[in-house]
Image (cartoon, rainbow, N blue to C red):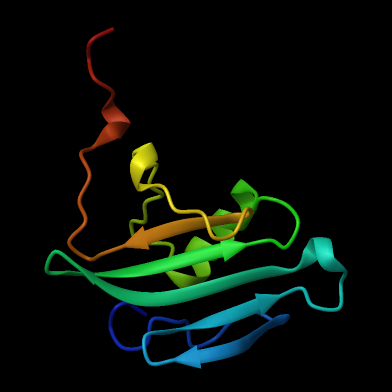
Length: 124
């Protein structure tokens, strides 16, 4: 399913996930409850309009540590899709906002295009 075609959340998630909150623009999902604090992963999805584009914003957080690369890959696959492009941004220091010390963000828009980085620059 396309993340932007309809609801910005997946229809089916693997066992262990629960919807903690639904809003008109997205939802909050929790995984790992009952397995101890270090296993809890929360995901918030929302559709956002920026400069005439619609973006799916997916944030993921752990309560007491930074999410891992494996967490990012899982959340990207489940909430954006394996065949979709998503980006993580490192903004200028003046634009940095931190409301949770262990939260990372992914962004997806159907119009997002990147160059083919698989071929290298050819400079070496």
